[in-house]
Length: 295
Length: 301
Image (cartoon, rainbow over all chains, first blue to last red; front, side):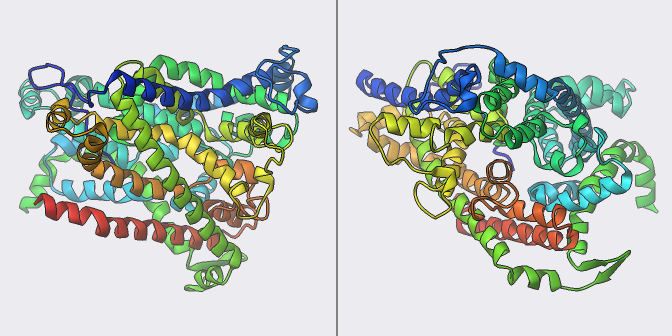
């Protein structure tokens, strides 16, 4: 389900439209105060996690009044956490599977999107409807039969088992079709007159024109697959093939009360993602705001 | 004949769609259909025996299943009832300020990009009754009788259900805020200026200009929010395990499905859970559609 509504912040002539009310300085000041207090609620838990992860003593109980900087900062917990779990291995597994899913998802979504946006052939409407019907069906509905299918195909406990079910989806096809509908037919017809094949038109004419939508779709796919725990839990019980989320779940069960080590594990899983987020935040937030989907 | 000719002449379109269609039928369409089929059979040794609606009868007589459904609905309603008004207020404030809205957005949105498993791991310690961050702060401001949070299964405002609702709001707020803010930013300033000329206060402008424009977005958020809430799994599983410990207070519908399929090894019964889950989602969507969207269509037309 999509909103597909971009903020109308520019007029046709390119002048920015001013939006939002005109508030007095005093009113704005109180708005800032509330918003900054709210922002603290989001930062403090992350900071506390970091502070605790640096404290060796945190493993044998924390002080009653929370510490926001440990008296004994050291990388001890990080050493223990990396010795306990092959986190780099988990990172590699997550990275490879998310990359494979995302590349495949972008390719198949844009290819099918092109066919439904610019193709004229018998059965087009019916086929598109087939893809759309599953758009509203949440994943848990399919997961058990999908697990049986993976088992029968021998894909249990393989990285491929984490990839193949997510290569094609109704949402991606729908989004790409919408984007390609807005490309004028004249461009496609001109390429056809030049003798280009449909696949070549798709690759050389269409894809460059829908780059923003491809970026949006990539963001959604990466967030969705990177953070998933349910599917890896079902098909993947081989420790060597664990994803980052599975490693975290394992740490949650084994490091239960050793707060320092647990927080160091969480920090190692969170920080790389946060760095990537800060670099790409513009695309990530815009992608989610325009589609209404968060992966 | 003509149709056959048209199909032959358009063979290249079918060639392009073949691979996506094949993958889709195998990995999306077939599992969906198979869930219905499996829910009507029972595995006996090597054979599958048709048992009709037996699994559904079993489920409806199973108090643990009924509790899982009510629990999921309850947690979902509590979450949406808090997160939507809160996001609405914060987004309105963010729409009124002139500077720094981007860094604020980035901070509020931070939990959305972090995996819920990592966040649940951190909050497991934040909610720890003796030395957790939350009780530490409560203690610091002078509250002696600090709550048990995740260790309290009873239905109280400081029990496990309240804790996971706080967690869900903390995780989800940024998403709701960004979507609502995108809607607010479609309202041109001219409208607010006109209202100010007519003597409307900022609060009146909010009530009569901002809020009506947000209606479709709020409906969208409620509909998708309910579906996501029904499918909630990872944080509850992380904090309460497959049984929703303590005392099944964190048992979710998908958690129950997972446990039935992979711990009790009853794939067929779990498929019936999946079908009921699907029916609930379908029902909610239909009810929402009847309540809100149809009215929108008639008023627009």
